[in-house]
Length: 487
Image (cartoon, rainbow, N blue to C red; front, side, top):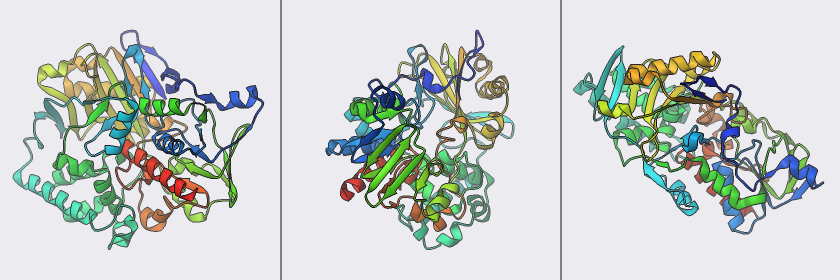
């Protein structure tokens, strides 16, 4: 749920869906309105795309540019998928994906084509570290309690993991020389066996997991190698390639602008419950609306795609894949302040911590620096636990962590905003599907392989930048090429 609280007046807007406070993509069509007002429930097209996130809209845009007749069906009353920007008091807050990293070329090119500008994320200043109940500030890569042996162990482990990850193609992790061993060994087990330094194990694990540090169970070591090379958080931490950027105005506008350009080809409120498919074509059914097409592209997260009824039923291996790829759980918290008081302490707004509900933070202020915004992430077990408690208790936990890190000024924000992705009925989590033990070697080949006229996309299907916005865009471009070849 998307919840906004004005700290001064303490107005809890409980039950407010985020889509109600997100700018609408004007010109788009409600599926129910189309079916009732026009008296028409059947649409014919070349390709029907399920899901109007970055992957689906990128695919639709590329297909439309090749004069393919596309229809996009989106269950929510907004576009953007796991990007979500709200605009309270004319500021932008990204509740979903937001950072653009060096090397994410397809996303940057898309933004440029759509006229969306980027700015360097705020990063100047020291980092707050909370370890074993003690607070320290540091610059560089390591806090002061790291010994030379700890630093060497971390660097050596990164080099080792990078070398192991290069022994197999990202398109086929299951083809790794030791795939059967690595896929049933956990990342934790490998680190415990091969890395003596507890500090090195901790920082490497955090760097590998990155956006995947929110799942319900241990990550398979093979999946860890895949993520380290694909999502690149670990490697970029130790071998920086530049500064991450953000979109001026928020990340969701990328999807909004693509949808606006497609116009009446995008249908909102079109919750696809059934897909009929065969050698002659496909039919997607969303309430009273039925779309008949030559091909379908399903861009939903695997676990959500598995909830659609397919007639005939999908092969068992594909069905088992969707059952084996749970979503992570993240609650993203934003606190608004009148000034960036952390700068007075020489701090960047970033935190590394081994305790608390929020263990990672950043300065999420707009390019002007005003208003001042801190973002924090409640992930994994903490998110699952705190999502079930009253809003006040969850907010108190978040503010207690901000106060530990930044001082008493952090305790009283002007406004508090949060979004729990696990409670999002049409995403059921973030940041992406989670690679459990045995998944790659057992069901990996089913992830991208078309089934007749059904094609699959979404960030989980991308070999490069998996779990990131870039991965979603790449998957959209790739599946568009696949469909064009099929057509």
